[in-house]
Length: 448
Image (cartoon, rainbow, N blue to C red; front, top):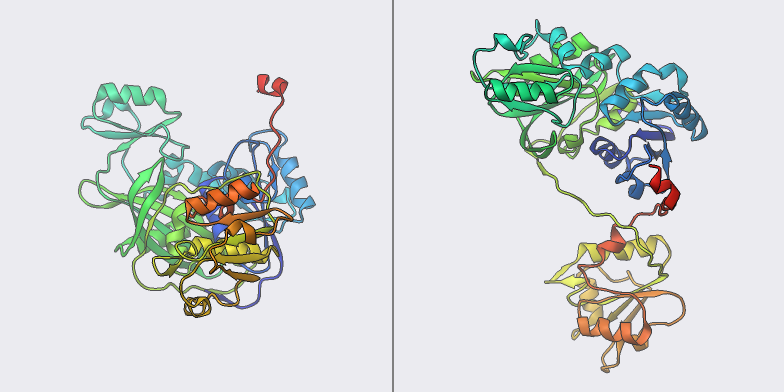
């Protein structure tokens, strides 16, 4: 990816920041120079509250105060770009551009409104690409199964496969504003795209959705999918797409790729293409600024598999790290990367790091062989059988990392300081820098 000029300093607001979409935007932009990221969302528990130092509370987009509160927040934080990270936020923010001092990363309000409705999307595109057959009258259905889903839904919520009339009646009672479509039994794909108003469709590539949970691709594989270029160009032209967007297709019973939905926003699993060189959020900001863009993707296939990630808040405060070498920093002949991450976190925050080791070989040669020489403020090579607690300075608030339970037990008993083995240090390497939010009072908890 290249562009014609250097991006100036930019303040970016992600809303709501705690969605999978918001977390992918954060991952894509956190390493970009000249960018400061800000999080906003409802006053509910979510991962963004542990990811950012500050989390700004805003009401739901349907709340009467939302527009004014969002405008004030953008002005106060001097926000340059707002990234919608949910379908409802996308529609709401696209309609309130004139109220904001920031640019909303989205196509027109009309495009966002059409794509928010599957019925409107199919009606807009049915003469251009293959869309699913829609049954307007349940009594006209002669062949099952059929698929019932909300017209304005996400995450596969209240979406049902109905195998007979009884199941169809139940699905129609459950789904809000239900849409009855032909059932598509084949493989499902997401097609990640990028468009420029000035340059047209610049990127279009598919990924197979191998494992899906709550509408999110937890396992997805990039693939070559013949025929999607024509579909992408037709959608982009008809809906006047700009920036990052995607559409989903599934094969019908006859094997034809058939449209499921279109969304003019970032997708959480766009990371599969991001790691090949397509930074969709960064490109979207550049497109909003009218820059000429050139996209380059590394060749090959990428498989992305996602699972839950841990992030912690804790009460441990420390100002010095003491760490063991054998079977801790060096494990099975290799440098342990999480231990190295902890060391560099301490270096970045000016906390002294001491290597405390009973290494049986030449310590300097071992450190040099593993490119670890010069890393420590102090190296204590213990060859006299002394206790490790005797070499830990008692002033301040040190912590101790060692694979040996007996060594940790002795240090903990003698000095009373926190001790860790390798399975425990993610508490420190994946800690949140955000302050813990205040617990609601008893009265507040009783009233909502």
